[in-house]
Image 1 (tube, rainbow, N blue to C red):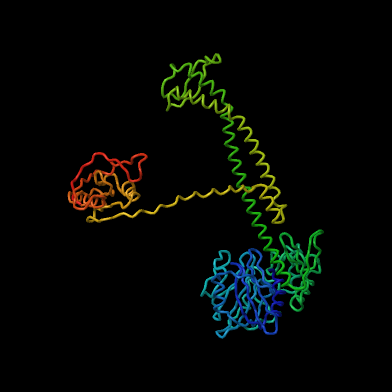
Image 2: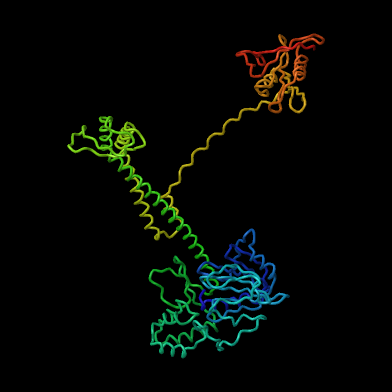
Length: 574
């Protein structure tokens, strides 16, 4: 947003939005605020304020964007303070990039300040007491801090003459404000004054002179005025009056990339596509769409560039390792020679020596052969290590050469793609380049899920608690006997069964480690084994018992049939 464009746009905004009420506020992203204005005699208008990095934009459209599902804090502040407020005034100081929206509520006049400064744009909500309520961006390390509850002040080198507590009318255009200590505002100077200053400076190149000595300029305005030569200052007087008093109808959009908007007449470069628009809002809306598309393209291109750089580093690391492998492989003959020399003269080599000099009995060279050893191992182990390196080197040299060739081809492919990145101008081209360089791996077919073994229900068993430390368990069927003996019982638990009669398997099960078994517990468990058998009531039976680790299954026997060793017996009456 240049100062000239801000002046032209503020005139359009007054015609479209003044006297409307703010009916809806939302944010379509962290940097984009959408405000809907309702007036009974006009169609619904949507004001978009986009604080894009280096290119803040402001325009009115009939399209409403998708809002975020959870409104950010700034959006909630707008809804709290400006719901159904009436837009009474739109102010834009000459030569500035700021627009003040004055909104009337019963509590007083609120201001929504758009600061369209490219490096640090912002949107600030100011209350009737001229204190900041909220801002889209608080942290601003370049200009000044923006903090809630602090008095609002414009950025340095920007006029504050239109910021008034009660929203009074701006002063006449001919009135001059005091010049900034650093640079005066170009829009406060007339043709004669400017020409006198320029001639006093020695008639330097006009565009550079305006840029270096005045604020309120921009590269397009400077170049446009310079094209008039000696008539530049008269043209500036005419242009300034036309911007202030007449609708401006010259808007030329160059899609780029990157997209740009021109508002002054000029001749585009040959072969450059252009689009013309009758109003600033329509041109800025189209610029907004193109800018978003361009930024998405840059994001995808940056990701591709990052992937290529990472792949290049990876391939170079592999190439360095292959160079070391090649060096090892090329010394295979030497390792073989050293190993044979060691094996032939082991008796001459002392232990724990780091270097040895031996007579060349293998190749017959007159001079002795000196080579290093590992002092931490024996001479024989050193010889074996040399033979292993020689075998590995002779076998791996061909593989190393083949792999080096593959890596070099891959490096050439990546470097070529890196050089051609600026030529990629569409998402489809970037996607194709990405797939060519990094093809997707075929997804492995999913492994079939393991068949779950059907769970067998736990059979019914009889349980009798004996104090807090023991439990007596008895089977009620062949399956229950199998479960009690081979799944529930621990090796040290006592196992009971009536001798020579069918009956239940009974265990005296410890619930706590190192619990001591008493004679009374043994008799209680034996009694349960007797009553759970085929013995007739009133008879006496012998109950055998032993530790469970002495009970084994009988191969091929029916379920529940076991054998036992190291048994003891007890006579029990049923």
